[in-house]
Image (tube, rainbow, N blue to C red; front, side):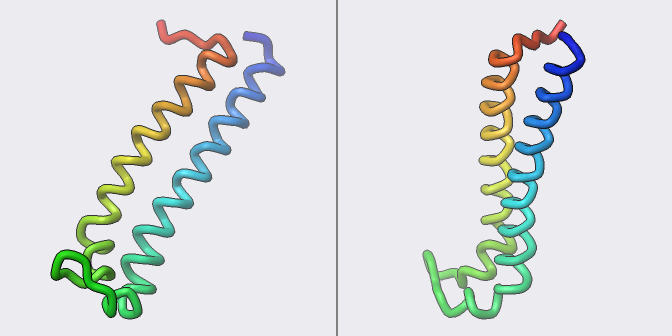
Length: 85
């Protein structure tokens, strides 16, 4: 791959990483820690929502983000004709 295409590929890769890690940070820290008390006034399945985000919601979101990253990278690899050897 030529140098210009390689830089563009990694720029897009980093853009995806920053976006997905920002979502994970928001769910894990903001919803699970900083906004836990206001969210605890909402209950889902008998559990307070702040507690749910802190204990399980952030894990579910993280796993979903992994699959999202794989999908995005597969599309990016096809777009830039990158192959794993």
